[in-house]
Image (cartoon, rainbow, N blue to C red; front, side, top):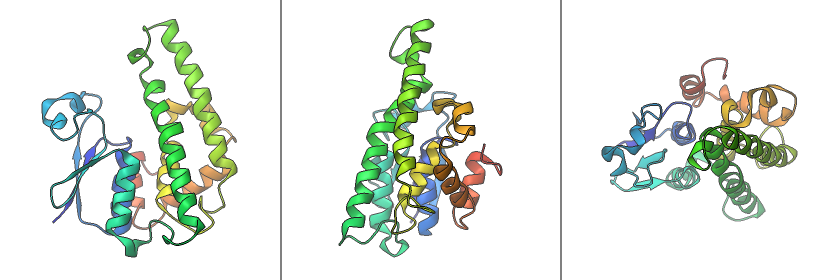
Amino acid sequence: MAYTVFGDLRSGAFSAEAALAEAGAPYEFHVVSLDRNEQKEPKFLAVNPSGKVPALRLPEGEIVTESAAILLTVADHFPNARLLPPAAGAARGQAYRWLAFMASEIYPMVEISDYPQRFVPEGAEAEALRTRVQKRIRERLLIVERNVAEPWLLPSGFSILDIYAAMFTRWRGSVGKEWLDGDNIPRLKALAQSLSIRPKIAPVWQRHFGKSGQ
């Protein structure tokens, strides 16, 4: 039986799909268009009452939401794919640390940067909020940047954290195109490049971000 990813291209659903692809799991991708606000329609709200993507339906029918939780679930379901370091040892703790950091310190800021009018009146206030939030996202990305072990985030090797971290380097509207295209996060950009050509993930990457990854 297949897993089902609910989400849109270039959204956080990329991380869920990439993890499933890397694990070799059977899955389907159900498009929920953010441009058409399909995440707010009753059909999707029955899947995730918060009206946010991604969501993952497990083969047994259970729904998992929140991108970090989805990644951990996929890693648990496919231990042979080694999407996390071994449970015994310091590396697993570091994996949890950085996944929690990105999920709590970066991901929530993306919605504010993309849709500041949801939080303050449109116009000058919204633009000022976007500017402040982008600055915060960049500061947090620089913390991750300084801790990339190279070639992957963890010294123990490839993991779901690399999928998660690389995703943020593609969100130019959220973080700022000029800043991301500059020389601010060379380690993360190299990590993303390595991820984009990883055999099982490359087709997913191209479908979401194109061959150039833009």
